[in-house]
Length: 220
Image 1 (cartoon, rainbow, N blue to C red):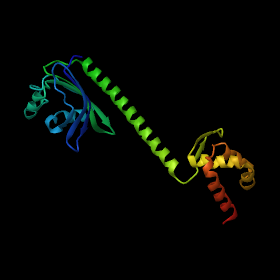
Image 2: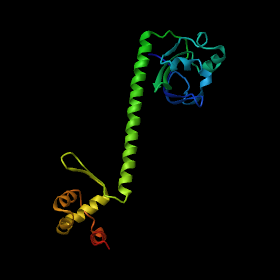
Image 3: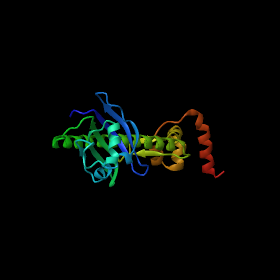
Image 4: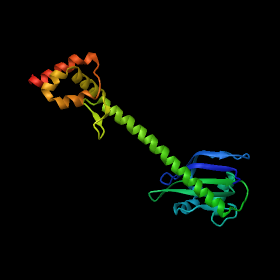
């Protein structure tokens, strides 16, 4: 395809009445359209995209799809020929991938199919990236939570191999390992072995843990 401008991830917010262009590619002297634009200036395209269809315009100055009142906005932005492929999520229009040209042109069926295919791939990549960011943020939040709660937290796999232990669990089980004989008498040999497998104890916490252990055992 030869074109003057590609609008990547043009997000549509019908509630706010704006379309946000996060990124674009321009050439041949075309101006960037990154930023917010009123949907009302291009209202003719929204019903088409909302139906999950591509809008295909050879000349916005003469097309029957473009109302006379909307033509000046298109001309001012050098949008004469244009195509747009929609992004529909949960039955709602949330974005579009658009290409524009500053001169009239006849778009072929191949052009339309190519735009739709590229749009599908871009949206899939965007969703994967967002999911990865969300997962990373969720893992960070969970890690912060497990490291700050006053509790012992550890995870074993199906074979009983330890996969994770928070710092308190590591500290406690290292104390168990360092004081195996005393712990075995109080909680049983099997439990002591499982706890001791999780990690090591920082030396400066041994006294505090020992005192807490004694108090729990004596009830004092």
